[in-house]
Amino acid sequence: MGLRSVEQFKEGLRDGRSVYFKGQRVADVTGHEDLGIAVDHVALDFELAEDPQHRGLMTWEDPQTGQPCSRYYKTPLNAEDLLNRREMIERSTRLGGSVVLLIKEIGTDALFALDLVAGQVDQRHNTEYRQRVAAYHRHCMEKDLTLAVAQTDVKGDRSLLPSQQEHPDYYVHIVEERADGIVVSGAKAHTTCAPYVDDLIVLPTRAFGLEDGAFALAFAVPVNTPGVKLIASPFGSPSPSRFHHPVSSRHRMVDTLTIFDQVFVPWERVFLKGETQFAGVLANTFVEFHRFTAVSYKPPLCDLLIGAAALMAQYNGIEKASHVREKLMKLIAYTETVRGLSRAAAHDCRVAANGTAVPNIVQTNLAKYHFASNYHQAVCWVQDIAGGLVVTGPAEEDLENPDTRGYIERLLGGKKGVTTRDRLGAFNLVRDLTASDFGGYNELLAIHAEGSLEAQKITIYRDFDLGRCLQLAKEAIGAA
Image (cartoon, rainbow, N blue to C red; front, side, top):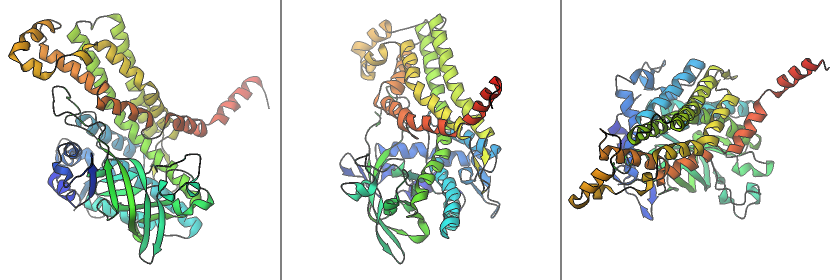
């Protein structure tokens, strides 16, 4: 097949999957009043692949078949491939209202990591995981599948290893081995986009001890596999009003508590089973790719924050104020630092033993840490420029009511030539981005998505060549 149309993608989601939202099972996610918004949002991936303006970036020709395929499935071999991948993510996020699509990005991050680690496991244990990963990769590419990654186990008591927990379902684990595959149970949290993808890739969340072999798992299953149940989070749900919620009413992501209740996985979809010494390696290798994806989709949101702040400054007539210019400069510096570090990570990539180009780990984590640790300050600058009407302005219904419209239009005007509706619309944009349910979702996402601040600090310290700097200091003082 190579590439699917939007309608083919949506039809693939009408497969009897078990999705629950606010206490009700959802019969069809594509037609749901809330979850359907996310389906329409991510369908942009398929639209861009057909659009002549973007097709050259979003697709590539499979050398084996000569058919056009999604470029996300192209394994990066050099800096150019990583730069193309980064541009795909940034461009599609920008066209998606600053909200990342994340239906192929994260899944292919997992495929690249699995290929790298599977080869190492095969060499140590004489397994055939890499062959399985390659076959699954090709299957996904040829069918143009969408993928989510379920990695973060619910964990229970975090001071305990999986085998020490009150019950084993705090971590996804094997409950039965059969001639044709394995049966697993447990749960994963924070699974982004699960209700509107075709397959789930499951990865280990951490390093395990030798006693935790039943939990050292990696596998893939279709979302409609019996026993897979998705409880979708309602947080970040939008209002239907485009006036009050100009971004979130049209663009959103959905995260799930992903339950595996006696789920069968055939052997050809099992990519790690009990090799505990490689569970942490696989988790960390996935992060090397996934944080690069993260810092590729952050700049469009930052750009929109800059634009919203600049628009409010103009509409309020304060664009020449020195403190406003300073805040805008800081927003620009914040954004371009993230963007520049993400590009540097691609340029300074390393090529692994299997030929895959891996983004520079230190620069990737510096970009993510800089974004996350400064995001709330960036939001503060935008809100300071905008003013209190961000959260105290009138409703759209008051603007439409003949009894109140005249007062609002006369009293809430700003700079001459700016309509009151446009000024209120700018306030609403700032509120949607920074002071709404969607805004709060983004603030938590900044801190915890793709790993915590502490995880990035540990990675930067661990991977930076401190010895080189120590040697420079010794040379400076003439020490041995």
